[in-house]
Image (cartoon, rainbow over all chains, first blue to last red; front, side):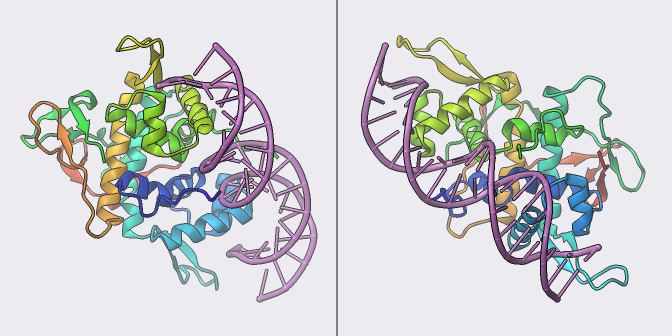
Length: 146
Length: 146
DNA sequence: CCGTATCCATTCCGATACTG
DNA sequence: CAGTATCGGAATGGATACGG
């Protein structure tokens, strides 16, 4: 049987997973946010096979997360850059990274800092706020069934 | 060749993906946050095969995201509940859901509301703040290379 | 340097039948 | 009700060779 298609699911979380629900796509977006732009840069940084990198890039372009721009230097090849839609995934990566640091921490690892591009100050953790502005912890909030 | 193992990757994002990097795991956690606890409840809600549901639940338990508690009613079977580590994934789901609603919106859909469990008020979007308290947009911030 | 094409192994997923 | 066992098809992923 065919794999289930989440693109037209009722739940927005499920639809998001249809675009970035796999493994490599998330890491590609992560690398794109650090300035990686070229095919071989992605391949070298991620260490994945060229064919599946090509497939993932194609899917991300089709999903509107990445776009191919003509070139920045003189070369005839395109570069993969994040669209605004792709840049908006930043919050997802921050949340994931924060969760991992809080709960999947590894001994003696170098924690990559999240920095403000202008002043270099470390960014504060993500925070959920209720309508009246007060902070919420996860167990105070309910995710309604879709 | 073997699939690459991200469990001991240097990047916290990659390590997180080793636990919840697949499709169904995210949806299982989402359902767990809405109160789903029993095997067949998950199976019915997600519509996935029983064998892979069993495998995913096992992996999530091994990863410390879910725990099996004896029973809440009288039955002899266990129930799957989120650990604190699993509850902390709430922020990731909120970010993902928010991104999807902002950028992958579907016409005429019913948007599931995110509510404060106590007063029922809708929750405000996730916000990133710099050290001095001001709001940051994604393109203002740099995710440093890992 | 940027991909595509091919081959192969592994994994994922669905359907179903079966056991306690 | 809660799984386990098995099967087949599809997708994923790695290695490599090839053409633009």
